[in-house]
Length: 422
Image 1: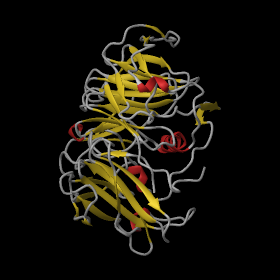
Image 2: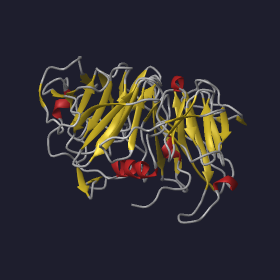
Image 3: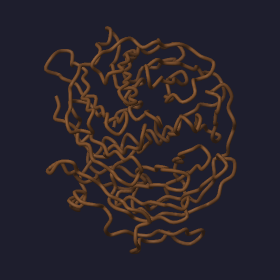
Image 4: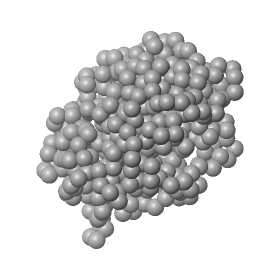
């Protein structure tokens, strides 16, 4: 698979209330493989048309014991999915093949209008899908928008990027506020100095894409509290969810390279470095070092937190599973919790509150209500790259449907099927 573009605004799509992916460079690559290479599971997916409460399974804490296999047990809490329209049931999730300890989807998926977008949820009702209309030259960048959880859709054009600029691409969505950005075109394989790149251009809409204006961009010493935070080539930026205004914070040359982690704005800014975790509670003005826990898992760490105090870190283990560690003091100390046998890769980790955690693998969604000590299988997987949004949570589908699930509480999920495009 080809390397991602030097400036790729698709990476910002999931940045709403919990922005970005839980990644190091190798996790970014793995996420791209999970996103862009697809096949269908051999098992049917008709069960998603009804409640996903059947066939539940319990997984217990293991310590030094072998990973437990699923065994029947009642669900801890009600789990239910809704398909609003008959015939719009999701297709199966892809299958994966393990090669030398790494998981890859088995068959490449199909692009949507020549690209690999991701449906972004601004909240439970407002969702957005970037696509392009290539009936004209150059292709027109478009945005499909819904204000009623996918019952109806409108298709609106994005602003045109100036000559020499790449994009625009969907950068952030929060409610009816949408931000799109365009960056310089850099040929693949070209060496470049990120500090010398021109700043991206941004356009904002506060009416779900009906009208656009150039976003007001200002450099700051500290990012405003409560704004979604995104990663850039030069540091971080935050977006005012009410106006689309942008505040930028340059971090070049200040300490080790940081990769932003998916934490809600109220939890502060969490980043991962080559040496551990760095956390800022003052908008990036100062950073506090936290240790990354060691575990039996050899994979890259995946972090999830709902409040910035109870923090979960999972690592994939060889053979298909995850090893979980939990901190209840904002990442200062860690305690080993369950080892979960997934029989495949860990697709996503989502903290619902300080006690409830969802882990999705190829063969199911598993939920813990005791801070990761035990897990219950509650149904099939919904997708990957789950994160919080205003008013709830979303899970983009992990196949080439380019659709999403949304939930107000992490238990009741509604499927939002993408519209026909272009």
